[in-house]
Image (cartoon, rainbow, N blue to C red; front, side, top):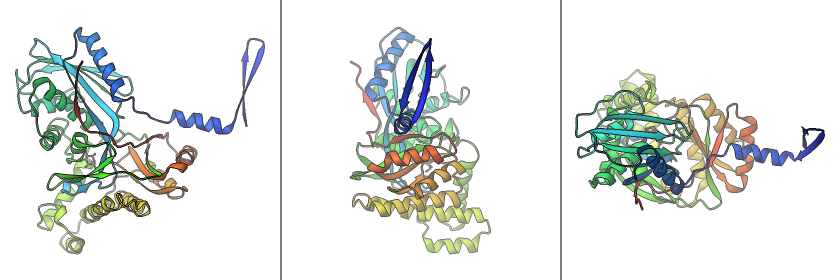
Length: 419
Ligand code: GLA
C-alpha cells in the first residue's frame, strides 16, 4: 500500500492508493493510442479553415507500419511481412490562385511547422530547407502530372523517429491527396515506387520499397507478404487467437539518413557483386561459403548471411502464422533479432535489453527489433493475459522510458470524401 498525503489549508486529505492502481496509472501514461481517422480528419479540416479561411476540397490518409519479420532485406529484393497501423497522417487542401504551395503541418507532439515553395507547374522542384519539407516536395516532383498552386494542412499521430514509417506515411498520404486534388489516379504499386523514388531523391534516404508498399496496400487484420523482387504481394490473415503483437518504443530516436543505413545497403550490394548475382535474393546458404572464399571483408560476409537467412525466416513465418504456430513464429522473431544485432549490426543496447527482458518474461513467444533499427521499436508476440505483466516488468527493468501500444493491423492509404 502506498500512501499519499496532501495538505489543503488546515485540513489534511489522505489518499490511499494501492500499489496495483499506481502501477496501472503509470502504465496508462506510457500507453500511446491512435486518435482515430475521424478525429484527425476533423482536426485537419478545422485547421485548414482557420489558416486559409476556406473549405478544404480534397483529402487523403495513410497509416504508419510495423514490420513483423523480414528486416533489412527489402533492398536486396527479399521477402518482408509488415502490417499497417491505426496511426495515420491526414492531408487536406485546395487549389489557391498563386504559383505557390503553402503547407502547414501539425505533428503528433502538437508542434506546428509551415513551409512554402513554387508549384511544380511553375518550376522544377529541388531539395532544400526545411528538411521535413523534402518529403512532400519529393512527392510533388515525382507526381505523374505538374500541379498548380495549392494550400494544404497535414496532421499526423504517427510517432516520429520510432521506426514505424512516419516518412512513408507522409509521402503516401501526400501522394494520395494529390490524386484527390488533381483527379489523376496511379496504380498502387506504381504509387509506392514513386514515393520510394521521392525519398531517394529529396531527403536522400536510399530506402527499400517495404514502407511505401505496405502504407499504400495494408489491409485490416492482415499482414502483407511482399516479394520485393517481383513486387507482388499476398495478404496473410492475422488471427492469433489469444496472442497480440505488443509494440514497445525504446524511445531512442533513430535517424536513418546518416551513414549506417546506406552502408548496410552498399555492403549487401557488394556481396551480390562478388557472387556475380543481381541481388542477394538469388543467393543460397551454400553461396555463403563461396563468399568467404571470394572476399576478406568480414562485414560483407556477415550482412550476406543475415539477408539469406532472414528471407528464409520470413517465408517460414508467413506459412506458420495462418497455422497459428506461435511458438515457432516466436522462435523466428528471436533469431531475427539476434541476426540483426550481431550480423547486420543495426540494433542498439536499449533494443537488445528490451528483447532480453522478453526472453525471460512468461507469456512471450518471441520478440525482435522492427524497422531500420539504431533505436525505435521492438515487437513481441505475447499471450494476451500476460500483456500487463510484461509491461510492468519493462517499466521496472528497462533503463530507458518505454511507451507501448498493441498493433492492430489496419487499412492502407485512401482518399477521404469531404462532405
Ligand atoms: C527502413 C527502410 C525500409 C527497410 C527497413 C529495414 O524502414 O525505409 O525500406 O529497409 O528500414 O527493414
